[in-house]
Length: 319
Image 1 (cartoon, rainbow, N blue to C red):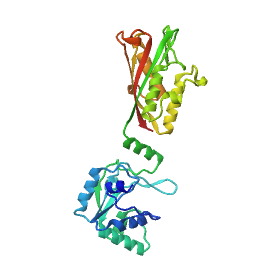
Image 2: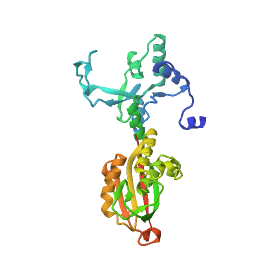
Image 3: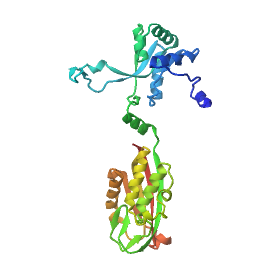
Image 4: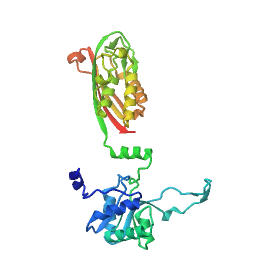
């Protein structure tokens, strides 16, 4: 932990106070001979390096400055009954963000004055202005928003987390008797895929990809072929259970790319229908699902028409 703190440029960890101002006062105490101090909300994890550089550049010639964002929505001032009383002109308004910075000597001075007078302010800009100091605004990005609600957290996760991808594969032996179940649809054929469940190799490969992208064990651990309750089960049921498990972990499908390899039956005429069925099952737009079909050029068991294999590449998003 201490090594990580040193790499991050953190030299001390201190206990916070009951208010922001009290926490800041405790935090600046061990700052030593720092020339400038920046105060930042941990609830704003998306501040950019470019914004920080702009703020530090401003503080080379100013005593205090903060990051702030233009107000792009129309603001309404309402009374206690929820009735609009005034519509402020937004061109001169800014939404204060963090970091907020100041010369270290100045920030310590105003913090001490406020404490001695029993005053408490919601941010450093208000504190500095109360004691007559100018605070300058530095343009910030709207991505530097404050995580306050569960919705904010979901947005931040979607922006911060790298894409998760997983690869799925399945192969089943073809046996006599139709219909053939693939991708959640029945294909008119005198063959079907042998399996403990309904043998839907497409959905099995997709499930494998989903589980892999989430870092979970393979389909055999989740739905073992030794479970009699799964005998002949519709693979759409298994897919729905998998999606529910992933949703609890904060994941949802973002894109699926599928390649079927089969010598027979010819699957080209069924690709569009399979694509639409998969899009519906995965709650995805159709252009987020690709279904391709290839032959094995007469090679091995697949080429002899004895089996069908499926490859699936799955990408997850935060939800």
